Image 1 (cartoon, rainbow, N blue to C red):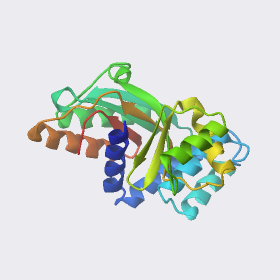
Image 2: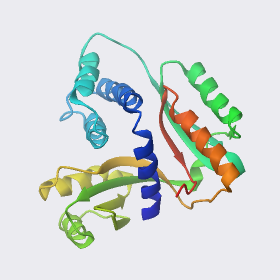
Image 3: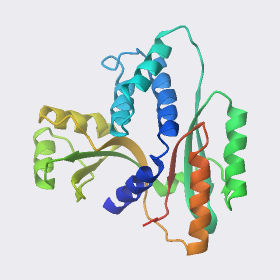
Image 4: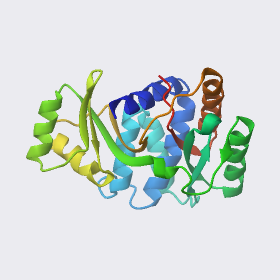
Length: 238
């Protein structure tokens, strides 16, 4: 499982060069999270988790404050949360999560991205069964044994605990996401290298080089869409 997160991390690092795109997506996500409840993270657990995830992406405070101020104002902009599923080159599996104020526009843009880059859209459930929704939390400065002891003392279960590069990554059930973070915070750890709920493929596939190039172009096109928040896939890009 560890290699799966490394692949995601490597892709994230490559795309983070386009910080303005990352910040714009987080601005929208923070606004939506704040509008779902109180614009106060202490009173809105969903907003709190979004802000903690934004921190792992180094989103500036000015971007966060602007989104929160917008949510506190009279703006009543509505966004729908959508999930699309489809297939890339050589039958690779892709999940696309979006936040949009124009469903027809987003559906057309996502479909066009698939069609123009060797893929095709599927129906709901066509590929999601190949993935597991997973909480992923990473910390530095601890060994896997020390992390296990922290979680055991807090009576929190994990699917797996792995040392990866300079961090220890905890994989857990989505329902345990907040419990894992709270266990770390009680142990004096409040900085995370990653803290999010993601979709991890149950198995990864390796594509031939020509298909891999088409696949990467498809993923880049999807991730560059304004309404797309996350793209998950089952291809080994290492």
